[in-house]
Amino acid sequence: MSSNVVVAIDGPSGSGKSSTSRGVADRLGLRYLDTGAMFRAMTWWMLEHDVDVHDAAAVAAQAQKPDIVSGTDPLAPTITVDGTDVAEAIRGEDVTGSVSPVSAVPEVRERLLALQREVIGDGAIVVEGRDIGSVVWPQAEVKLYLTADPAARAMRRAAEEGGSDLAATEQSLLARDRIDSGRAAAPLVMADGAHHIDTTPYTLEEVINQVVALVSAARGDA
Ligand code: DC
Image (cartoon, rainbow, N blue to C red; front, side, top):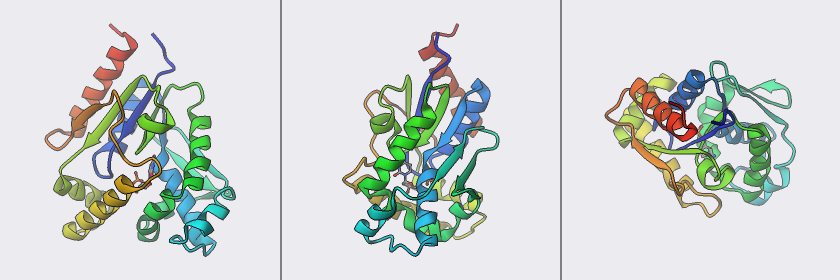
């Protein structure tokens, strides 16, 4: 049995990825990496430095500059850019509205891919994102692909963000899905060998239980 397991959890936003990933990591004593936060941190830096996020060449030219550091405690994940704590700022509307075009730039993906692999290192980690099982760590022992009905996703996201306009939240989620799934570089896809869980009918606890069971089975636990 290996304690260096890597659990890759991919899926669109609002599918329950973050809560599930953190819950599984906490239960199993694993580290946790939110790769979406890294793309958001990169986007925050671009906005902060007045880079036009719709100009792929301009974004590419700056992609090596931000120093992004992710803390991997599932109960208190942290993220800094050039030493500044951006955990809250990266959840704001400005960043959310600009993260998809920035994430589509190959130079951004290459830079963050290297950082992500560095953090994963010897494993013992749950990693959430869009391309973890397909590109970042295809050798992950357990791969999950989480989805949920758009209405359920909008409800969860609005609750997280304290917003109340469900229709607008759903439209914004679907718009990001289209860009994330349609881009040429590492689009959101279900990885080979991934287990698909539609989380719509389940509570968070139930989804965590299902994933923990899959990890235990993969590790050969009794
Ligand atoms: O999971 P999230 O909503 O915080 O992710 C923000 C954006 O980052 C998402 O719209 C697409 C991008 N992303 C990505 O392209 N690849 C990843 N592995 C994770 C996120």
